Length: 194
Image (cartoon, rainbow, N blue to C red; front, side, top):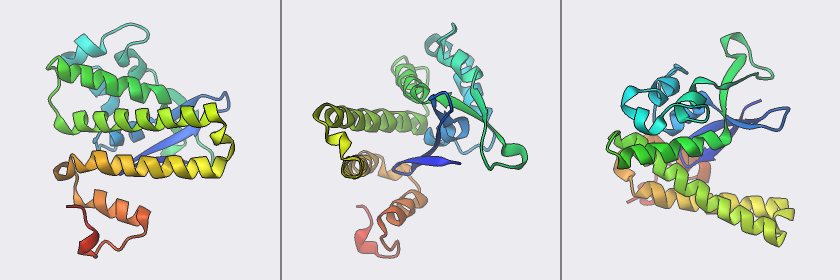
């Protein structure tokens, strides 16, 4: 079944395949980057765009090549046309976000929504990753629920801080989702972000 990873208002459908490969759905990556297209082809078109070729390039391990070769698997309990899912190894998301920021620095991309999403993803994953490494090194991760709750709390706080930098970028439904996650009443104006 689907196991969404929630990063603030970003939700990525994630899976661990039988061979242990951790993947995100292609549509989940699209949504995380701010694209709302229902077509799973947007990610492939974006990653192979001629304008991004100098950064996304060619070659077996290039962003363009990896985008054109998703991992395909059958989801349990899925029906209709959605039984097969195109997905990408979880690390592809980080490599893609890094390439987006490189493309920005090379003045090859100017879409502020995609750039801001890439920055938020990179920063949140980096900070949570370092905490997870410390937890593992100290054995704190052995107290699973406590460590998991602490990591989730940190991630929620970090995403809230990062997202507040881009508050005008996000529509109201972003804040409504945060309120739902926190159990807050959206109609309570006193709790809304400044």
